[in-house]
Image 1 (cartoon, rainbow, N blue to C red):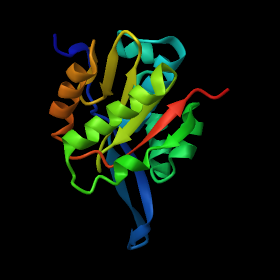
Image 2 (spheres, helix red, strand yellow):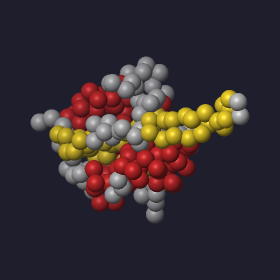
Image 3 (tube, rainbow, N blue to C red):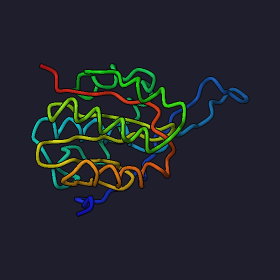
Amino acid sequence: MTAELVFQTNNAYDQYWLDWGNQQAGKPTKEFEEGICTAAAMNWAKKVLKTGPINTFEGIGLDAHTLNAQMAKLRRYDAAPKEQCEMVGLELFVDYSAISNNASGDVVDSVDKVTKFAEKYGDKRAIIFWTNTHTMAYWRSSKNKQFFDIEVGLYRANTTKEITAKMKEIIGTYGPVTGGIVVVLPV
């Protein structure tokens, strides 16, 4: 068996803001960033930690418009994952610095690290991880393994080997995993 696509998604969202630091002729420039990946990954992780597996994008509990607004705030804290977690209602359990020391830049090696951390921490924790440009999430239960990427959707598999193969296929298009965190629900 291979990893199964549970639901499909896309990431066609932008956040705009005025950049007052780059004024030309007294007017700020309009800047934008793309995507809602961090907000989507964190909220998906929060939901599966609370309720277990979900089968639809709507199961996350927030629509794309709300995730887009939340992402505009979260983006300001890209260098502060603890604060991002608190904003979403998660708690930072472990700063996943072992992944950011992936000097080889090897996608296979970094995906293997993500799944090994998940095996160690079990179903009460999820892993949020990122490349230089994109954020995703991973969660495992005793029954299945799940990989969520807002660019493509949610994949579920029975074994670590099956989900790892799908993760390597997808993440290979983004580049190596450069960092990550293990998150839990606050007590």
